[in-house]
Length: 125
Image (tube, rainbow, N blue to C red; front, side):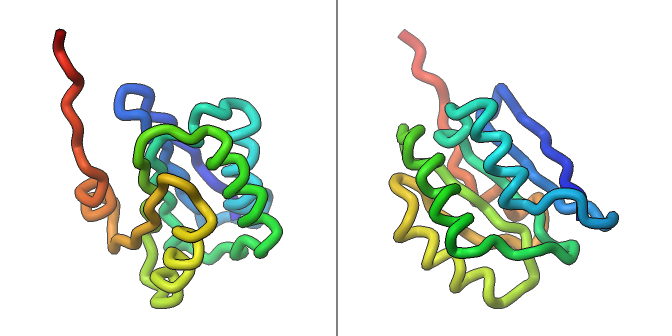
């Protein structure tokens, strides 16, 4: 599996897509690398399209990812998994406990994932 990362600066959103290619890096490695380069991304919303076959994060990797996201604490933020795997809902409940100020949800496609992230308008003074 390979991953594609898109950083949407204006929306403060990161999109990670699992590509159907031979494995070169896991989703966990991709997330950790992005957070190491730019720790502030931990306060942004993330969409992870994990519909293609991929290696699941280990409990140890989830702990490392949670620590990196929690270090960038800010406002309420969201991680949306695009998945058809029924276990994804249970994994989200487990992750909600480990991550501060972050909700984990599951969507069926990109449009549904984007709709789950609340839209906020910038304040004008």
